Length: 161
Image: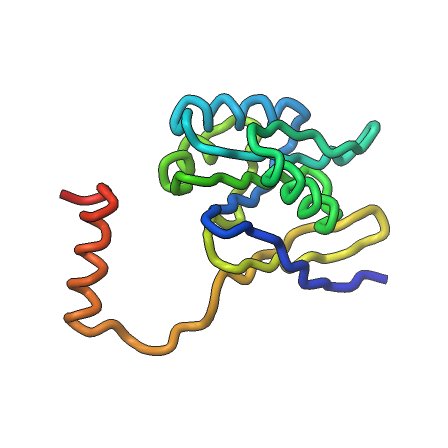
């Protein structure tokens, strides 16, 4: 009998999380190369759960806290062929297209600094991520002042001129 779980993922303060599906054992190495190429000074952890063979959690990291958190998250998900990246001092936008273009990556479910939960279908052989709950529901519609503040923010962090 299948059931659906909501799995809360831990995202340490000041970090962003990228959650996705990938199909091959070399995912960890290829994603690490992408991160080191695009954001070489960022702290990161990459975890990947194998779906066959030894079914181990593979990982690479340059930050012990993020490594521990990434492994804990991937074990709580209990979904094969799933990867989770935690990055500190960088925004996912910097690496997201490169990750989506990585030949092993099938899909990216989320890239966020928000509180996040994965919706997981549990079957007899394992779990499958159906989607995510990313952040919170909207509370209203932006005003002209809100628009001005958001445009200013993008310029302050260097994403717009």
